[in-house]
Image (cartoon, rainbow, N blue to C red; front, side, top):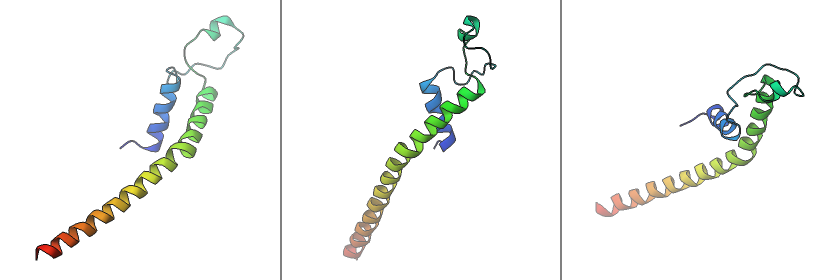
Length: 89
């Protein structure tokens, strides 16, 4: 299973394929600089923080709900197995 950080990095790479390419800070009005692939450290951090917010606010609640439902189903299964074992004795 992926960690939180791995998922957020994957989200960043999906959104911006040049996320992993670091370019130096420069003058964005310079056409040569503007055409360079990559993101500055501050741009990468900004994108990471945005994806982090999406993960924490939208994905984690769904995961927690799924885990709660899964735990409830697991408890129901254990109860049914106990009843079946009781009936077979």
